[in-house]
Image 1 (tube, rainbow, N blue to C red):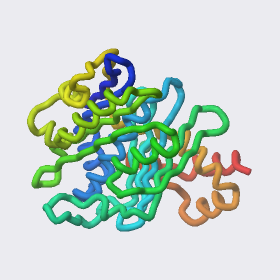
Image 2: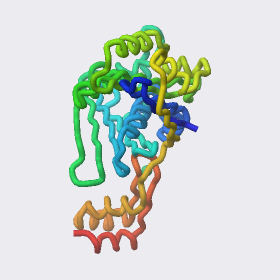
Image 3: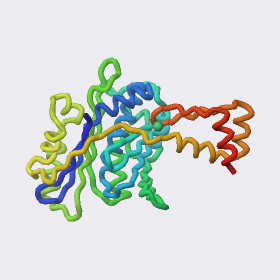
Image 4: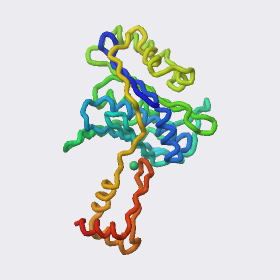
Length: 292
Ligand SMILES: [Zn+2]
């Protein structure tokens, strides 16, 4: 079962989130039939969104993380709620694998640096919070750290990783976000920097059998870990037939009439979970009557 822990340092100057998302990323890979590099890119985004969604205290809040790429991969979207439910979409499920000089998947190259990162926080009321920042590397983790620093004035360290088997299945996936609270002492920052600079990649740590608790322990070595909370994470779509009906109605009378005359039916696919909703002629006629 995928899960996330969050806690504070003993001196309450730093907060940490650590997530294991192996099952969710493997499910996303299977649902969208992803190439290895697309799995890695979407997996990192889903993992980050899962942690960012948990930062809210507002019951109805939904966090959307959009990565706009400028190279092979043009758009990645992950949406998370505060209960650990996450859904993900990638515009290019079969992006061609590119590799770095040391043989790793070159996610940064596939995404490129010219795009941007958009965070939308929808509180279930009228106006959502929308913030945008530029990409700094295309690695996603660094781009999110940059977003926090720039848009939320929140100094953060972010690590994200997806490890794949030879067959392209997900061996492990996860990540962490560390956030300095206001007025963090220099000694705390120095300790954190030392811990992070000596830290292996998240995928390496999982490979060595470490749990997310142990990873949090390594990052917070010498700082102690308090107020630990643990939550389950799930890849779960919130699409419904009702929402699809509303989408059809919003097309308007003219479009619906065309659909009726030309196809006599409609099929709508959810981009997040690939579920197909079928509407037959009678249903379409009813929607037509209800549209403007
Ligand atoms: Zn769906």
